[in-house]
Amino acid sequence: MIKVKNLYKTYINGPIETKVLRGIDLHIQKGEFVSIMGRSGAGKSTLLYQMSLLDTQTSGDITINGTPTENLSYKERVSFRLQNMGYVFQDYALIPELTAAENIMIPLIMQGMTKQTAYEKALHYLNEVEIVDKSGNLPNQMSGGEQQRVSVSRAIAHEPKILFADEPTANLDAESAQNIMSLLSSLHKKGQTIVMVTHENEYSKYADRLIHISDGIIDKRENLHSNK
Image (cartoon, rainbow, N blue to C red):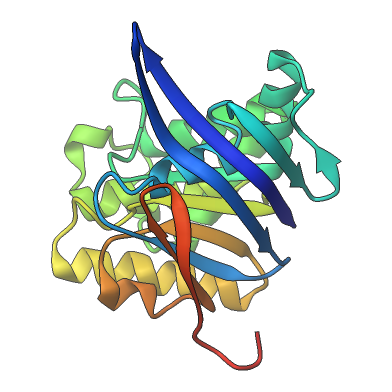
């Protein structure tokens, strides 16, 4: 599903160059749940942002579901993300002026779905995460755990090939965090490919495989389940 070859990312600020990724090689299979771990500043979120096409690599190749992505135009990258990827962020990234249902509807409408169909689908996925009663609530009328459930619903409503999650439990209390991880685990059991960045060992156990990043390189790969 994802092939990364000799990936580099360098940030330049005037005369200062910061090499964050330094030659990453990585394959992620369809249906796999991969957890990327490492200390703060190790490059794990940067790696996720390159693989999810939210940022552009300095050099190296990224192939998603058989499509080489390095030569895609900006418009093509936006379209490719919309058709193939879902995103869950630690800050939820919900639009504050829109209700829970409306936040989920936005990417569906962008794909050409009618408002009525998008609304019905939004309610379906809110029901899936057990907060359909919050469909008319604004983000500031929901708890952090509820907002993250809306974020997950938005990420999966268009049935993406890959779900990217960047520290999805970071701002949640223990119970809410456990609920989110149980939800991701349920999606994985249904065949969803998931790439998650986390610094919390207790949540990494849900993955099939751990990728440990240190100073911009992979220093350890760990299979958690023998059948994967």
